[in-house]
Amino acid sequence: MSASLANAIEVHHLHRKEPCKIALVGFGTVGSAVARLLSERTGEHSLRVSHVCNRAVHRKKVDWLDGVHWTDDIEHVLDSDADVLVELVGGIEPARDWVRRALQSGKSVVTANKQLIARHGAELMELARRHSQHLAFGACVAGGVPVLSALQEGLAGDRLKKVTGILNGTCNYILSRIEKSGASFAEALVEAQRAGFAEADPTDDVDGYDARAKLCVLAYVAFNANVVPEEIPCQSIRRIAKVDMEYADVLGCTIRQLSRVAVDADRLQAAVGPVLVSKQSPIASVVGSQNLVVSTGEFGGDTVFSGFGAGGNPTAVAVVSDLLQVARYLNRPAAAGHRAVPTKMTISGDYEEPHYVRFVVSDRPGILAQLATVFAKHELNIDAVLQRPGYGKDCLPFVVTLEPCLASRLRAALDEVAHFDFLADAPFEMPIFR
Image (tube, rainbow, N blue to C red; front, side, top):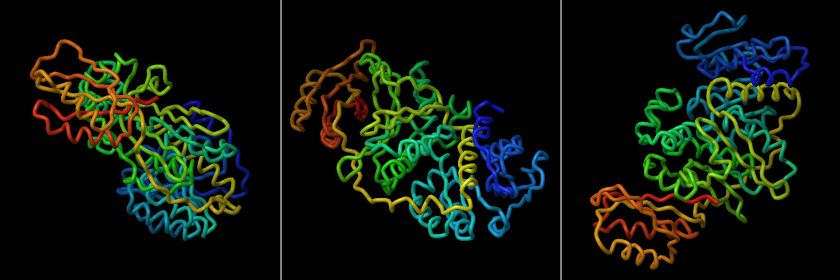
């Protein structure tokens, strides 16, 4: 067992006369890691796995868990004497129904289900409050990095203004490989799949949906905002190419998938997508499958959290940490009752910032003049034009960087540019994060 797994237990000593009975629903990579972590430290806590529920459960049975009821029937778990249900099956349904019924039947719940909390967290927290139960979801964002507990408890004395981070290890792994090896996106994706960092269907990761769900959870915890995932603008990393990394390097930058949310008066600004970040930024130093979150408070300034956010062991640490917290206060009024009803806020992704725009053209005289005319029409100021040698005239890439402008204004300009017949590919734009 790693030191981090051991420390998750060592710093928490519970003193219940009776064991806190845990029902694990889902016994895959994370569920088995949670069970292993609990079983190897039985003398240091009062948590005991009493039930394991999984499809084809006969294939999941292990000989190192004693006194466990193994079942593939969720009804057996919901009707049991378990104190806490740990939901690790993922997805919205039937997970939402099971969590609701567990809370209604007098069981607290721990979950690592980011999509469930992103879409129904406020509803489930209210249900937990009404039934005097606890709902904990610290493993939903950044796995073993304790971001949510830090925002909710450790930084409770500050007034948070924004949260920014790299929330998806798969995207970070892919972009790191393109940067380091010069691989294409497709090649880097295959490598990520072979290494176990990307799913066979990588859509949720590379198109930003996974990070967007996590950002909704962050918005809920940091700003008590009720945000629907579809309200947050989301851009895929699929179009990132070696040439973009080359131009980013010329600009003293690299490219990362960034998730960000900030309070702006009575609304939230939020977005997920690839951005250029200065190589001097701590964000640029995050490589491979690591996660990083930076919270910015009005009084405390920036606080940085980083570590490995995915995988069985890091996620298990977060789940067990939640279990220890829930068990400690199991017989006290639920913390959910002390949280204000979340606010429904207007969401905007229309940031005003510099932009990078890559064009691929069939070269001919007058192209820059035509682009400049459109940009001027939309009140966009060109900062620089970059063109590296070595590319053919029929498929020539070059980059225009723009001074700070609203994303909506740039999109309107590019919609107009899209009709020009010299384009060999659709323009590709990214913010330059400062």
